[in-house]
Image (cartoon, rainbow, N blue to C red; front, top):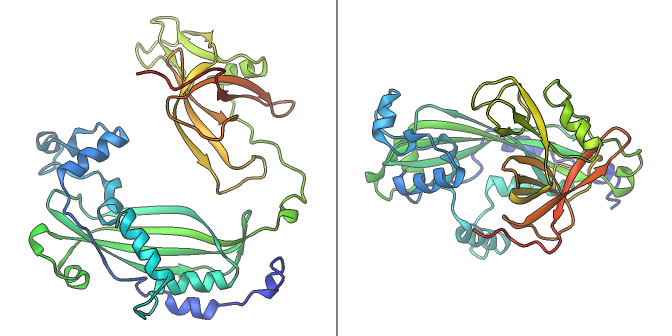
Length: 348
């Protein structure tokens, strides 16, 4: 088989279409009901300070009957956890019990057979029927909603796969009935649509056939033009309110503290620490090199900015960094942060 020629791959359109509309597997039942301890961990990790998640009094002040769970926790309640996931994967790779494959496993096998072995998530939409409250125990069942015809994308040739997950809530006193029984008595609370792209990566020679495009141009405004002009001069400028002295970034037309429209700039030393980061693998755009580390850097002056990272195989929160300016082309110069010489994690 020539992996670069799509004609050498089978077409499983009919088999894939036969799976649409059917559950992808058995219902997932939350191990625990919605509870305050998990909500507390979530809001602390996310830095979400909305009091309606922790205080009945605050919730009633906005018209709710009691404190609610953050809507973005929806999936967290029914996730099986790392150990259960590993055991499930082992069972799938070695089905000694002879159990038939689930529709999800059949779907993935058919797409793999078409050569679409790579995957990237594209979008997720959630719709809520009512807030989740303490005592709700979630049951989730997923359906295969759509498998697209074969598409050609920047990543390669593939199919978009959309699943729809229906969440219902039962009382934590409902007992240990199986998922189907709980699903039948549950109250609908949310629907989630999740879409992935399963694709055949473009051959390396095809990816490099076209000239490399320039990096995307920044959207220049009267408020931020000074910053990009500064980077062209290899200077990292921070906007400063001349009325109260507050530093701010990203640039704004008015001071968020005193509302003054008067400002000037100060030059940053370019030194800071890594406040947070992500390493991007997909989707890939030809203007960038991958893996692509992107950091949220807290400057010594106190403001934070998002910038590319370079010069380390491993990144750690609190790592001491310093800015270096990279001329990506004749028009675009940006700061790229690298580990500071002799630097180490910031001390608490």
